[in-house]
Image (cartoon, rainbow, N blue to C red; front, side):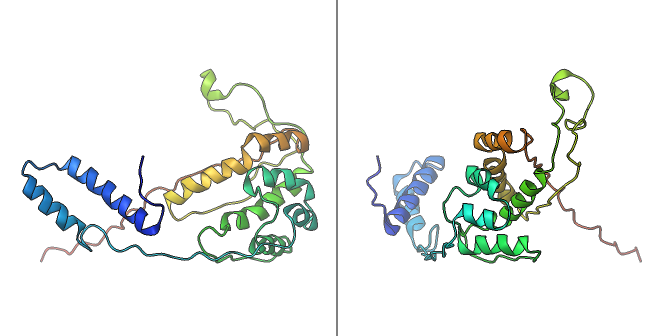
Length: 232
């Protein structure tokens, strides 16, 4: 069990010592004096580590309106259970999240520029979810049932081909610039739309009809072909 104090200096020391233990294990030297000399070099400032930089994170202002009251205000109060199932499990959203939802619902285009950990994901997913919930009020019927085609050995068959009362269309397109961000957002989407609590909300409000989402990775960018000079 580590006795390193949970401070900035202690965390820096812990990370440095952990790295050196790994390095010395992977690249062990027989000569002890050479090994010690190498470790002294690695511990020197600027070689393998720099001094830690500390960034103070601001406290973002909470809305004076609860999540339930906010959703009721924009006309989708019954979405509260779904929103709190995974997307925003807090009583009060941040002020910029509430503003983004209000402005979006009023037909405005919204740009949210805030720091890390400020809830930008919720700021852009709340309007999407609100529109889906509003549309789902008019859905009738249920999706096709039965075993998935990939488990029965049959040819491809759309799983929702027999759905009635629900137009087949893409409701929202979200673009991400990095694969690492996609992985993080995929976790968030599953929590918001595919959790047991979310499915309980579907059963009560949409006759079990869930909100679907698909992750599609873009093909890797290829360097454009360059014109080659002709032989003289």
